[in-house]
Image (cartoon, rainbow, N blue to C red; front, side):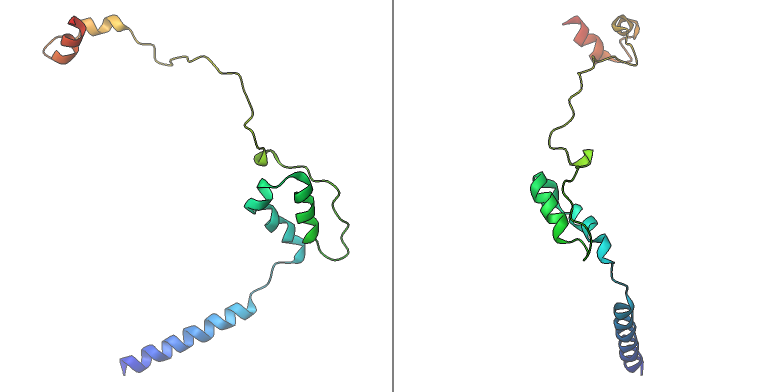
Length: 114
């Protein structure tokens, strides 16, 4: 009896899944360029190839793109900034090591003697 119920449950899930797949709404063709722009091939292509890739998926009746300005995320070289000097937010006093008693950290005192 349990086996029959599980088989019926499986068939019910299969029918429900097929119904959801058929009822799913497809993306409009207007969003096709966004899918192309998310692809790795688009990021690695030169400007002419990018324009061709975008024009190949544009919806019917849409004017072709003549040029495409790449967003800053797709830049090939990192933006160079002048190297900032290191500034320690917690200044250390090297003389404070001498104030630590030897029984607290004997290795530290041994290192300072050498």
